[in-house]
Image (cartoon, rainbow, N blue to C red):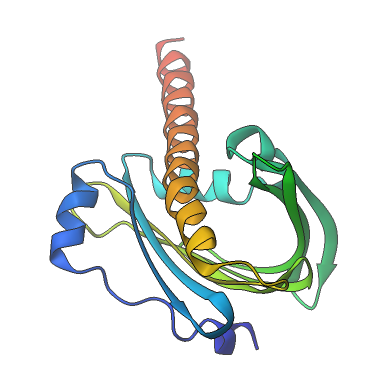
Length: 194
């Protein structure tokens, strides 16, 4: 069921965009459909090993400490092999507006995390995280999601906000994965010296 809802995601990254990502940019492509259904394709590179990036992405309870704008991320339990997760994020600073969703998350180690909204303030939020370690220049982290608000909002506002926030969020996650990898490496080095 979850695979059917994300079947339109997972397209390869065009060469021009891949060059920008390899240069350290978090690249975000947005396009909209009916009802302000926004498709987000975002990419960033990291030098962190896959296991560090995976650890950060699945450290659900600590995501608010890592991701700018995330107010809450709480494990609710498991159901049918999926993790149920309650998340809240700030949507607009100027009017102190936030959105809450409950997500069903299916982890497919070592390189894919699928999620879908099962309830909350969004009509739709279906997507995935993909880790691709075969780029030759580190690991490509892809975040692909379809978001649709339940209430009418001008689509240009949604797209502008996502275009501003998603790169910050990607860089924060990658920075944390690289920090954790560095700590793990330092701990291994001191253990070998003992």
